Length: 185
Image 1: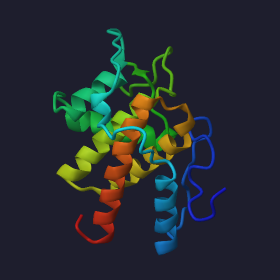
Image 2: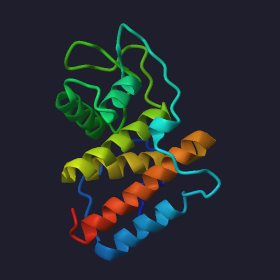
Image 3: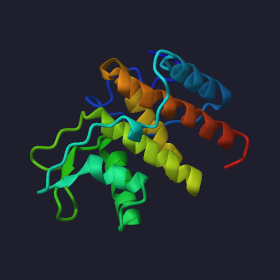
């Protein structure tokens, strides 16, 4: 377990972290976070946006989270603010995204839904990066850090294609944190 940054030491999809009463420990914490992320980055895979390397699956009777995220990233979702708020809340509460949700609010996970489709977390990370770049909100940065913790904790499961997406997200996360530290955001 890393003392400087312990948030990726367990498999976070199976054992979500609540982040309750997490204290900020200054530069040592930031240094630990950066070491954690650098240990994952691989030069073997070209960094690509997750939207450039996702395999698409569709079910018509339920809300397909992958399709929803792609529409949100590409500005093709009419009720964008509604769904961004729902997805952020769903992730913040459970630290999971499900493959499919019921169409009727409050959009509970569909009976057949699974939470370990790592492409969803890559796409959600890309959406949070986009949102942060367009209109900075600390909530989006906080959620992005937790999504990244989840992805880093699952790195052993990622395909080469997904590692390219993770590399891109790691670079973007580093830039965002740098901008927050330097007061640019």
